[in-house]
Length: 134
Image (tube, rainbow, N blue to C red; front, side, top):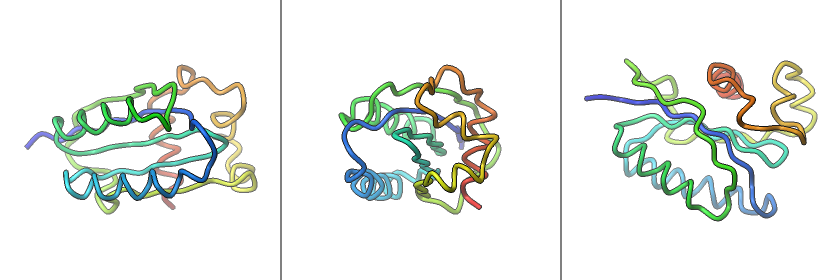
C-alpha cells in the first residue's frame, strides 16, 4: 500500500469562530478515510499535513481547495513516504497564540502579515508541524 504525505498552506476566510467546525469536520472525514495529519493555525493562516493513500489524500485536498473557509490554498509538498510521521493523529490541531509564536522565533516569520505560502520551504513547513505537536 502506497502512502503519501501532502503539506499545504492557506488563509482563513472569516473569523476564528469556524476553527472548531473545520477541526471537527477534518476528524470525521480523516477517520473515515484513514488519513492522519496535523492542522496548525496562527494569525489567520493554516499549515496542514495529510498522510494516507493517494486517492483519499487527493480527494481531501480537493475538498479543502474548494472550501469557502480557505483561500490561497498552496501545495507545498507531496511525497511518497515509508511510514506516517503523524500516525497517532487522525487530525491533530493546534491554535498558536501570539505568545506561543513568540516562543518559536525561527517560525514566527511564517505567520506574519506579509506571509506568502510561496516563501515557505517544504522541509521548514514539516519542521513547524512536527514542532507544534510537542
